[in-house]
Length: 82
Image 1 (cartoon, one colour):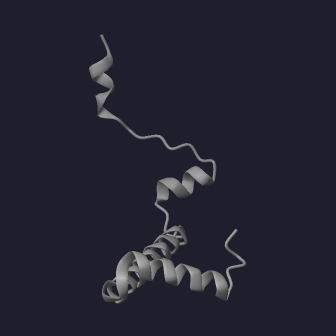
Image 2: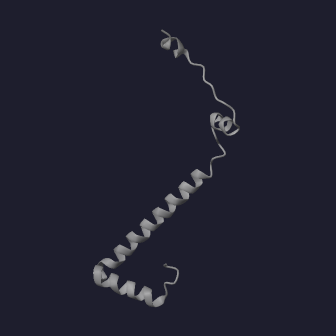
Image 3: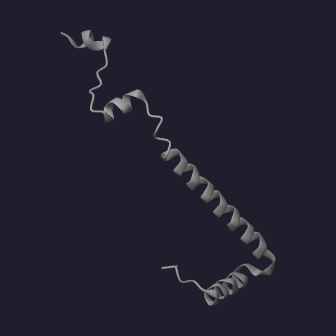
C-alpha cells in the first residue's frame, strides 16, 4: 500500500502539514513524531528480545514440553475427605 511513496507524494504531505501546523510549530511536531517513532522501535525491539529469551524456561515448562506429567504433593487432600 505505502511501498510506492515517491517525491511528489512526500511534497504533498509536507505542504499539507505546513498548512495544518504552520511554520512555527512544524519543527516541534517533527521532533515529537521522531521521538514517538524511536520509542515505538525501542519497545518493539524489547518485546522481540523478550520473546527470543525462551531458552531460560522454568523446570515445570521444560518437563511439560517433554511430555512428563507434573504432579504436586498436596497436604489439602485430608480436607476433602468426609
